[in-house]
Structure formats: structure tokens, C-alpha cells
Image (cartoon, rainbow, N blue to C red):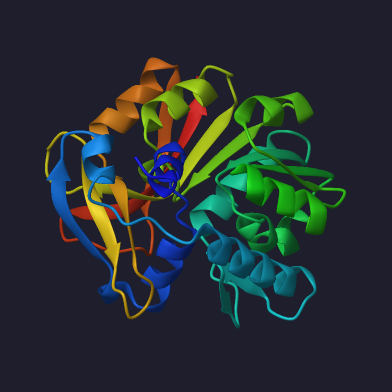
Length: 270
């Protein structure tokens, strides 16, 4: 297995992939059906990690410095594109905790969701936003973007050593991880009051969770990655097994396949 494929196996970064689906959703294809992650990896091309990181950092700094109001997956926008259900759930948690919001943002890049919601959460009595990301992104985040409210680390354990979150955010990340159910178990076992998913693909029909290859055409960026399409009942049951109740579900803006809907879910510890 090549070094690139080993890196993909560890953690698939959705940064460039999701950026392209915003700009040109018809350009990305989902194909194949794989029994396991390794089978999908064997047919994937990988990506140039340094280009993705450089572009993500440049875009995040433009937002932090006020040059642009919003970036998502390294793409800059002239207006903020909100996930209103996620913002509502953030404020809902803060309202139950005397205005205190402590977020662990797993796979949160360089602060996309933090800066996206900043104008609202800035008015809370206390905000801590900690992002768990790949080591290189965590390093860049702590060097260039960390402030009194925003911080980064490269694993869940370090994140929980920083503080005790009352909200966990999983936005467009579970489908790109080799063992997403292990991540759910790791987080849910820590009894965080609320865990929210967003931009996650769920199958339209009652099929078992399976893996496809997600491809970007060479004229844009030659890359391909494994991507889970989840059975909704399997995800909700996984959370239920750890004592979480589904409070609400909603549709995300993403759309890559007629086989799946990209959705979000809000779970509360019972």
C-alpha cells in the first residue's frame, strides 16, 4: 500500500471534496459498491494533501481577518451560508447551560463552523470551541487561528482533556472515516449532553450501510476517496444504544447521489 493510500485509510479529509460539490455538485460522482474500506481504497487515487492544507489555511485566514465573511471546505463566499438547525441547536444547548457553550467539533477543519456562527455565539456568556482534526491541520490551527475561544488538537482524548464539552459537532466527517461507528462509540461513551450530525449521507431505501468511491474529475482535481452511505436506522440505533434520543432530523444542502439524502440529526443524552 502506498504512503498516500495509508494516509487515506487513516482519515479521509473531506475538505476539497465538499468544496467542489458546493461549486459544481454535478462534477462529483459516486460509483461502485464495496464490502470493506480496503477494497475501496485499492481503487482510489488519493489527493495532494499539501495543496488542500495550504488552500484551507489561506481561506480560513481571509475569514478570520475579515476579508471574506465565510469559507467552507476552502471555498470562499461573499455571504455566510448557515446551517440553521445547527445554529438553533447550539443556542438551545447554551440556553440550558446559563449561556455557556462548550463545543467539540470533530473534523471541523480550520474553524468553518466556529466562524460561521460567531456573530451569534459571541453574545453568549461563555464560549469554548475545540476542533479535533488531522495532526497537520491541528498544528496550523493552533499556530494561525487559535484565540481565547478557539483551539485545536489531533485526537479526541486530547480534546476532552482541554475541557468538558456540552455539544459535539460531526459535520460532513463520519462518511470519510474508516470506522465511523467506533467514533460514535468513542464520543457517546463520554456522556456529552448533545451530539449533532450534519451533511451526512443516508440511503433512501432500507439497505445496509455500504461504501462507494467518490470521484472528482481530472479537469478540476484528480482525486477519489471511499465514502460511506449510511442506513439511517443503523446510525440512530448506534446512538440509542449509548442512551441518546433523536430530538430532530433535517435535510442538508448537499446532494451527490439519487441513492442518498444528505441530512443532519440532533441527539440528546437521556
